Amino acid sequence: MVLNTPKFQQAIETVKALSIDEQAVLLEILHKRLLQQQHEQLLQEAIAAEQDDAQGNVKSDSAGDFLAEVDNFLLRIAPRSKFKKAESTF
Image (cartoon, rainbow, N blue to C red; front, side):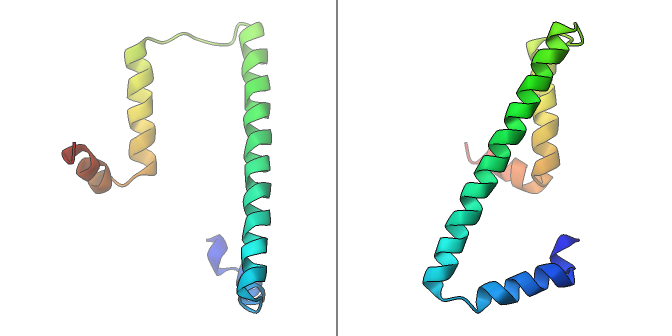
């Protein structure tokens, strides 16, 4: 796992040595960079999707198929017990 690498641990120790204000500024910078990277990735995925559509490589599914895919995605990213708890609170 990435968290156990010496390079990552060194970065954590370096951040710990910063003042709280410096840590806050660093966090803001990292957050903005992460958002920018996510934006660029989404843009590239949209461009690829448009190219696939233009080449006829896109298949159409029913709304039910789409919802089943969303359910499967949610189950992959959230432990089953947490997902069930969220359902039971509504």
